[in-house]
Length: 299
Length: 294
Image 1 (tube, rainbow over the protein chains, first blue to last red):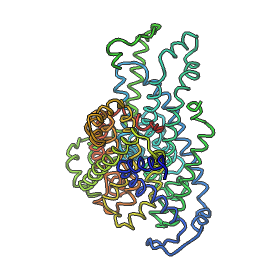
Image 2: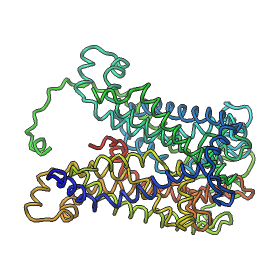
Image 3: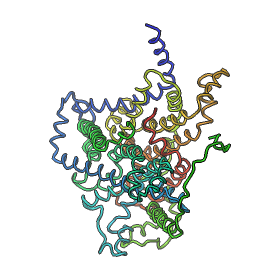
Image 4: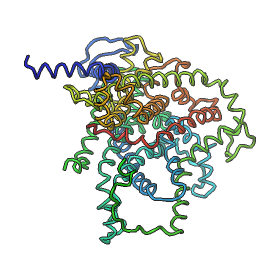
């Protein structure tokens, strides 16, 4: 062993006491179950959890044969793209507003933070209650201000319930996205903005050609983290659409939990989880390819 | 920064900004009020519903305010028949506190070492940290359940402590890494010259300097663990072991709904979470967006 290799071996082993505990935790609770799940997806596992032997790709074949699969994939796409896009659009506006000076701004910023700190189960349950066609207070309000003629069963049929879930998903995702963009706005140098004003650029022009390029990185990171979070958001859909019969309001995530907990089919649930991971990767890859969020940083 | 404090920094010549008119400021305050109301309204409805009697919560059509106020809900809810509420609160606290402690012990050395030293395997380690952010408990629920069945930890707090510590590790390492990296190298070198060991430099020199980052990671992990839902749903099967998030989700669709209790305990849980988040508001984004750890 020459000197440089032995030096790097000793530097690597010197790092072990510091990084090993985190490494063990990542391996044991993240990588191992991920691998186990892929392994399970090729096994024939009984309802009781007993492994009856190898199953090849039959779980994947069974998954492809599920009649609801395509509807569920379409729902997943609508769910992720819809929630992430609407959240981003609203957050850009909200952050721009919260970046201005006005008395009470700190209070408004804290109010925006609340849905992030609150458990999404609790927030979702409030909407389930308040949108109830019989005793829901939001329904009553909409009738009282003559937006609705009579209370509407927002959570009683799949399409409406799915849209309500998307709205709640946006509500829950807004704080993080808005704060990320606010952090990005803080990085826009004041003199650049002043220069734009001096050059006679209007507010829209200034925003599009001066502010947005500075926000590139914040938008990219917020979108990526949102895609992962929204895709994995179980409680919102489960609590709003979960009690509806059939799969017309399911995403791949809620379908996976139905297969795991309702049908106790661990092999099939594992196969769908593996597919889910690929779906996340594909959505992120499409996003990276279409939007090229990192272009700004690399150049 | 010190130069600026001493007034040494050259002041950039500035064009005087146009001051917004009074009408504009008033419009902003009004818009700000509406926005704040939008975000707080669901929780106000929650608070009012938690003060209604059971009959009031199910009246058709509903009334905006309770006919009779029931502040005693906050006492009687502990005996709710729907779920062992006190046990659920204890579960939530035990899991969150222990997961946060485990995160603390595991992440501080890792964040410190990766921020200060270059070593073979550092890139791989930081990549695994990113992968952890991509793989969430929801995605791995089946694998986690199967793993904990095999090791005999299914339906235990320990399983959820490990899961919450592991999946919040990315945020914790990112934010702490950023803080450690901001400590000037001269400070560390001076301590080394004084004969301090690596652990001594971490505990005695660095930790006092980076405590805002540590507090942010601790609070974030605590709140995120308390709100975790998917893995708890699959792994904790006994009702007394379940945290609030899972216990409360089972209120929906029950015949003997007790919305007033559901929202009472929600208010009790949300207020401290919001308070803690307000404390770390300034640093929250830094950690979550520090994805490009250098």
